[in-house]
Image 1 (cartoon, rainbow, N blue to C red):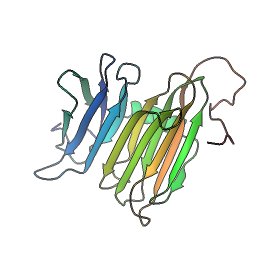
Image 2: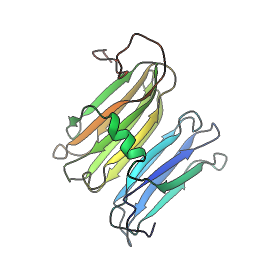
Image 3: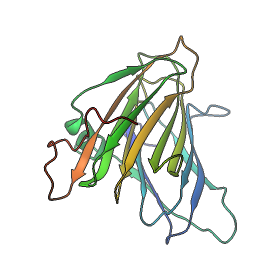
Length: 208
């Protein structure tokens, strides 16, 4: 993306139902990788990976490497995210932000009517190191994203996590030292019909 007017790009990864295992990096100049992440999805058709990467001060290059086995190809789409694009849609549903100190974690359980969850991670300008997990049942990871951003204010992370079925829990872990807190917003993005649940789909007060 040579155009410096492109402030962010949307990255979509999917498969035909097989596991998805990929490295995604943002290159800005020689030997400068201000953003990188490792993405694992158990079923890349049921849970498409959908995220927005900040690309201020171009030119920038997005590199996607399939690190899965030869039998597991993936489909990738990278396109500019406009002012009214995915990041704006995610921000529109963000109702609250929690501080997660370095080394700490937060869990967010969602009820079965929630089809997808919007996630925003950012910092006050310090580096962002985090792991996002989608669990369905005890220690049953359906999706894992390991994330690094050199400046979590300049390059915040936006993502949509598909949550089909029941028993979905999103876990956000701040893998940085205690001196590097992050700010997380995790809210229902698309909600299906039925149920006597709160409008935001979040099961408040449930013990996990």
